[in-house]
Image (cartoon, rainbow, N blue to C red):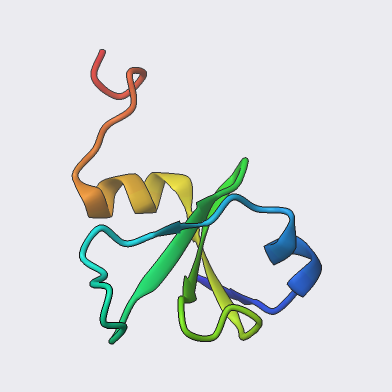
Length: 71
C-alpha cells in the first residue's frame, strides 16, 4: 500500500462511500477505482491523505476474481 496525498488526484476520481456507512457519521471510508489502483480515504477528511491499494489486492480483499482469473 502507498500513501497518496495529491488533492488533484482526489478531485478527478469518482468516490463511493462504504455501504456500511450510516447517516449519523462515524467511522467511514470512501473508495475510488483508478486504472491500476483503488484509492481509499476517510470520508470525514476528504482533503487528507489517501491510501492506494493495487486493484488485484483490493479484489482479493473483497473476495472477487476477475474473469481472467476464473479461467
